[in-house]
Length: 149
Image 1 (cartoon, one colour):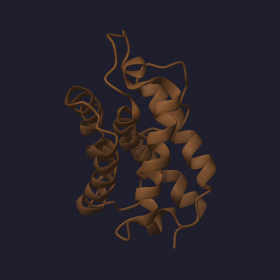
Image 2 (cartoon, rainbow, N blue to C red; image 1 turned 30 degrees about the horizontal axis):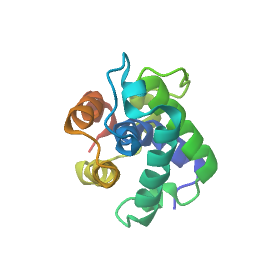
Image 3 (cartoon, rainbow, N blue to C red; image 1 turned 90 degrees about the vertical axis):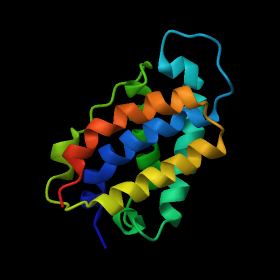
Image 4 (cartoon, rainbow, N blue to C red; image 1 turned 135 degrees about the vertical axis):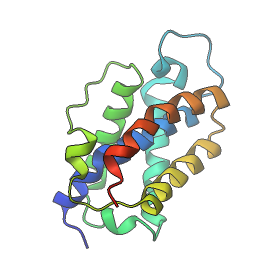
């Protein structure tokens, strides 16, 4: 099993993927200037992060990475990262993807499993296609810094 230090290195990956999930909780939003507002703000982000983390915890393909995690801290940091990435009032001061995942040896199937868990949350909350696409587009470029084998 991985120690908390190993988990902490995965936090930016999970946050990036959870960013896509934050739209899941919001109803069809009125026109807003930021993705954060269109997603429903912090309450929607928090709800989706909760669901996403539960999906990951139940996923035997990847839950070993989180076995020693401080779950309340994980949720808080994920919500901050999503908020900041979506143009909200939060600041994420975590590490960049490349640094956070150096030496972890994350492979495509593991990355894909996390994405699947995220999509499961998006689908559960019926995120509109436009917002799903916008959020997932933020994640695509991060794959090259996360998947190393």
